[in-house]
Length: 204
Image (tube, rainbow, N blue to C red; front, side, top):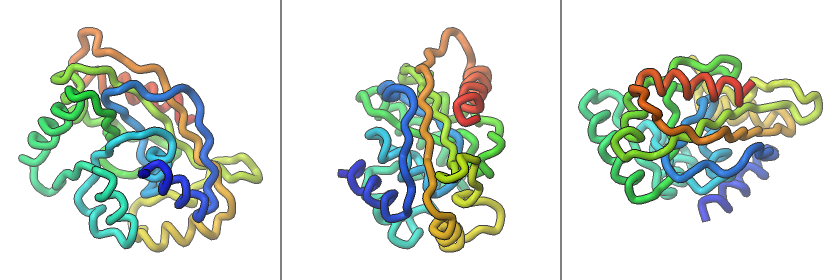
C-alpha cells in the first residue's frame, strides 16, 4: 500500500522513477540524502521502513503519510536518543526487515555526498546483517542533466522546495542499487567510509 501511494504521489509531482540494479538485500540500506522527495522515491522503488528525523511528522500531508508508513523517528536534539534508535533498528534487522537510513544526517545538494556517520552502521554490526548502498539522483527529463530543483537545503522551506519541483517540469528520479556488503572485519567507521564511496559512485 505504501509503495502504491508513493508511486501515485510521484505521478502527481511529475516525477518518473528509474530503477537501476536489483532489489536491496534484507538488512540495512544506506543512501545519499538530497530531498524530502527521497522518501517517496525509495518507498516507490522497494518496500522499506525508514529512519527519519522527528521534524518530518509536522510536514503538511507528507508527514502523516510518512508516519503512517511505519517510519522510525529520531529526536536529533537529544543525544541519548541515538542509542535508543540504534537498538530499535537492530531489533527490526534481526527480525528480517529492510531499514533505510541516510547516514549523512542531513540533506545535501545532490552533487556532493557528505561524510557518513558510523553510529547507524552499528545496527548492522549488532544484528548482524548486510548493508546495501543506494545512490539517488534527479535529472531533467528533457536534457538528461542533473536537476537541483528537488534539493532541500539551507533556508529552503518544504513548500518552496515542493513548488520548485513542480515548476521544474518532468523529472527523472534515478535509484541505483549497489551490491550488498558484509562487514568483513571492518569497524563501523571504516565500513561507513566504504559505503559512502559506493554511494558516491552510484549517485554520480
